Image (cartoon, rainbow, N blue to C red; front, side):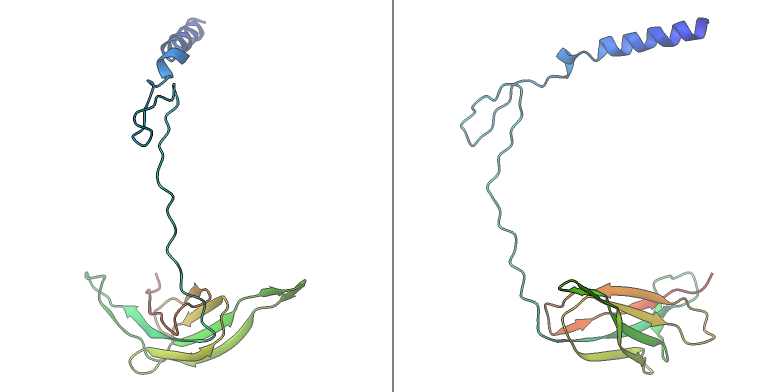
Length: 164
């Protein structure tokens, strides 16, 4: 019983210490209205800012890059090209009118000796790019996504991590 009374008295002290009068800020002013007071409100006014203009979406683009792998050792930043990795581009599902169009595989390729790949003339859309480690390799697969391109050349390189 003694503990319940102690907790109740601490709660009352906490409420009394945080009365409404102690939480009100002092009257404020801002520079744009030459120091006009706003009562207890704090008003910060800034000039309207226009967001930067984005370039338009291109009618088609090329996607290329390199598939790398993380090398073993204490330097976790060392990466090397991964030849024979699979790269698949999947156009994500879209809505046309009131019809849901399913995801469609656009193309697949295998990386060259330097880990490079390339897809040409992709239409503007949302894509998932799947990177598949070569069969029997100690690396994990990975997926990434891109949206409608605003440049004609998109470079997307990825490093596959080692399996745990």
